[in-house]
Image (cartoon, rainbow, N blue to C red; front, side):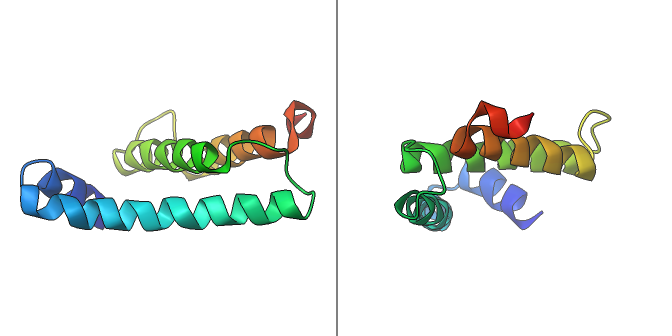
Length: 98
């Protein structure tokens, strides 16, 4: 809920935008680092790690919003299935999701 409140406030209060940007960038950097580490070990496909991180986190954010709003299509179980399925497909290949 804190993220939703920050996004809402930062969208109308310019002084909060740098806080939101810094917070989000730290998450992107973290996920990108995990992907690069996996790539260096040969565990992940050679995808654009930064682009994956951004896509992964924006997908997660959208799913969190749907869960928070109690969407009938996205409960906690579906959230995990969708997000992890995306990560597997992107990082391990389409055959990993079968």
